[in-house]
Image (cartoon, rainbow, N blue to C red):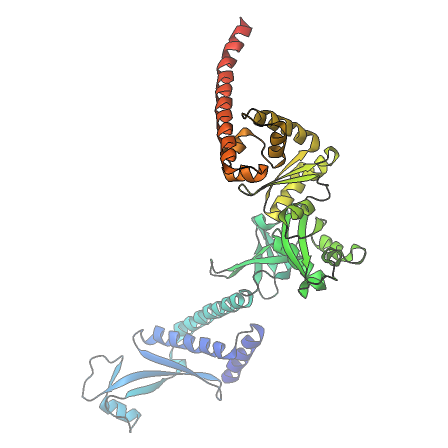
Length: 435
């Protein structure tokens, strides 16, 4: 009866816990060894073997056969005479296995075996959990909200629990126990005794995986998501490209009557999504990214990795977006710092630049205009440039280009002196006005 019950236990654990049978048997064997050592002593050489035919764990204590009437340590040695009584064929120096009756171990040993089994079963389950999820980092996963702990959401993944930390939650989303939740696997760690599956609803990867699930062309690799930027719960932008000239990447992501993008919007609980075409030319890509605003001109500064966009006056608010959201997302998407000016403000800025650059000696209005159109917006920028750059812009010799750079240096020095003088006069004028 006991034997059959042990075999049933092995089968039940294997089936319900999904732990391999040989691992369950190993746990039982190690538990019995621990129990025997608890009863007989830690230094004894004890082994356990699960007998499948009998359905029981057999214990054996091994001692070295000593050729002599006495032993130095009876826990690990046995005299030749005693050994011959147990095994007539043994010889001195042999390691003799002596069977231990499990029933002789007692209640304390049985309790020890139970504790070892429980602990090792937990360890095995943790290892299985870690192995199951360690390769799922970066995937979508669906679970059920179970409870809340200090603002974190604990999610039931059927055979494991995951945590959705407060910092990875979207502020506009609320959940109740029992709600279905789909999230992105951010990490799987062993920081605690229990492997921890960390989820996120704010990561751009969630948006990308949702599109991959809804758009077959993305899953098949025909359409690629080149970049993604999100302000979770509010708005997102994705840039897409196509490896097939006959496939419109934006249209594929939008779907018939917007069905595909609306499915993603629904899963993100109303987060607005702009789908834009990716372009290898950074300037054109930025123009696409700032949509729905129209751009009149683009100025690029490679050194500072900055783009200056000039938009019609009536497009300025649209380009910046509510609380700067549109331009922030465009900058995240493209990787460029973006400054936006209305045409009127930019024209005023250029007028100031012309007046300042015009102070450089021996420059005609045509040369000043050429420098301004090439992106130079102050005497300081001219002074900081190389003579070869000025020469290339104006089509002159490097010697003449250097003369312009030197002239710009003098203007910058004069501007610094003028500014210092204004600062000095400022307090005096204020005092005179009070008098």
